[in-house]
Image (cartoon, rainbow over all chains, first blue to last red; front, side, top):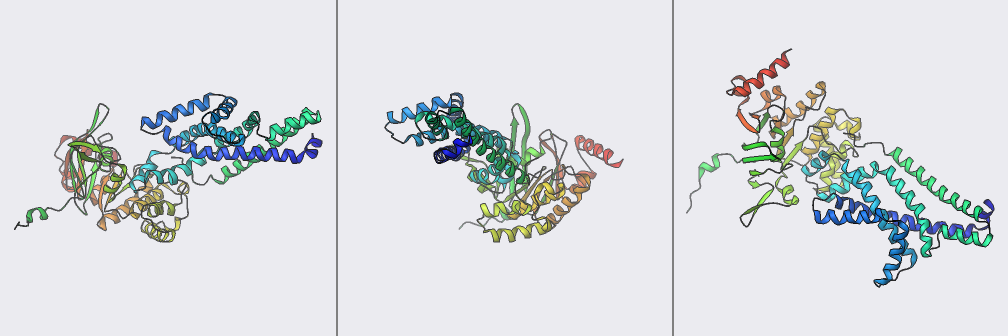
Length: 218
Length: 269
């Protein structure tokens, strides 16, 4: 296993980099979309809430592998030619946005209404309230489920090898078939996924500890 | 040439005025046909049993609760509704913010923003709404905290403040926006008894400085001492109103007599 890591580390490192770039881009883009959609889901206007709900149901309710293939084959049909890696980022973004919107919706609903009324009475506008009063607290409240989602996306990114993106999983397959040491190779890949996710979990735990100061309890 | 009508100017202009305000929650009528006028520098206390509609009235006057019928005017401007081709429609949130800009509000449960320090709670709107720089806002905010005696707690987060301190920060937060009228919704009801005094003291001072105030409260002592006028509500209606002396010593209605008796019984033991 360590022999594989040593002998093939340039390829593995490249694969891991791609995995990280794709996953973290999707997480970041999905976060923006997820926040907007969380407010959409909670909107009083049915014309906004309903499509958001439909979107969430679709992306939560179908397998990610299927979503990848659909996006990958659908884009050329509508005249959009993009490299597989972008199709991968797009799919993971759309997928994680659905899950993140649900995480944020639950977080937002935990902010006491009175805090928002106090902000309104001070003349602060709806979007400023969302940005400055609600979301900073929601990010703290939802850090544990959000970390879960980041780890999930990182692991699920292994599926994008099916649309020929050379990320860690695909690199491992290539090494395995060349060296005839599948077990050692896949163990090495597992070790890399695990290492990244452990680091992520530690960072998250650190942030959570640091942010105990001043959280909604009322 | 038109004559200047002197009779209208002798009648002082109301800062807040309610005409025939009604409000229902589902089938339950919580406010019935409320008329209310608040003149500059006037301090009005609203008392009454739980569920009498006094908090709802205050929330309707601030349009935190949209009223169903009647009108609420802040500085002669209709709050929350406008006329659109003969039909009454809700105004935008922005317009609501504009009309009620002269109003500051303090809540029973403080509702400080827990992720912001005491000072930041006070400066947030100064920066976001009034566009002050951080330095200007901090200066202004410290002056406000000073006013409620909490300058030394500026850097503290709400979780490390006592209830009385939280409420004083909340008052400073409202005052920072230079309101011309302050609404207090049971400001001491969530406090430990020994912390009530410090909040009432700040309110006393405000009233003495000429702030126009509407205070929904169970603090009869405060009402008797500070209010220019006391309004007694029951079952969504104004039952009696007048100078505190008159109301507390010579209650006319049976309901108020009953209310005051119960209160005295509980506070003499």
